[in-house]
Image 1 (cartoon, rainbow, N blue to C red):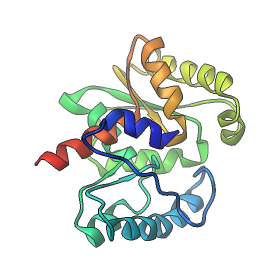
Image 2 (cartoon, rainbow, N blue to C red):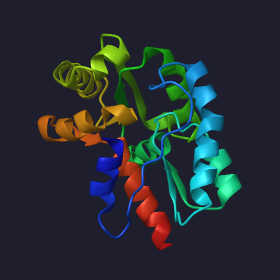
Image 3 (tube, helix red, strand yellow):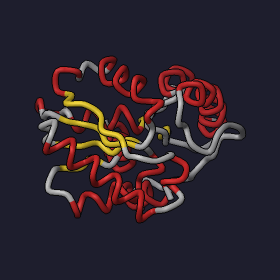
Image 4 (cartoon, rainbow, N blue to C red):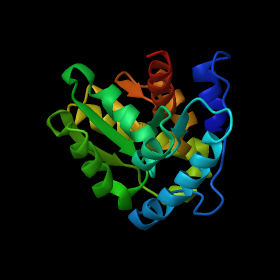
Length: 200
């Protein structure tokens, strides 16, 4: 699903090949999983960079291994979280995040601070329910995320809402059409970032 979204976003000018890490959890839902994913992402990315790869996209909102991949490969590398947050906060826009992973709330807020965006950050809204179960039920996932998006806008004052998660990519695209507030879907945002890097 994430590879398909990236292919649509980048178009035929930039062919996309999806690579899955050899080990690790299916979803990154807590800090331990995020930490454990970093060396796996680095290994997979470094192996891909050894071929005819022109750029890399880390398809996880917590950006595991992002800095290490940049240092190790010298290639343009974009991460879902970094790209989506920077795009959302452009021009000083107040932005919030809607996501499904309560155990990563502190890590997400810390990432916002690392990127120097805290002054524009209106906060995080979480869906009700276990992340893995929500992902298995697209209709419920969409409904819960839409409620979180509306809370970001109506209660927190966000003018843009980032959907925080790669596996939420299809829901993010649907929410863009359903919600009055601007939605930043992380996979297309990372693709836009990569496209800019590839033309610099």
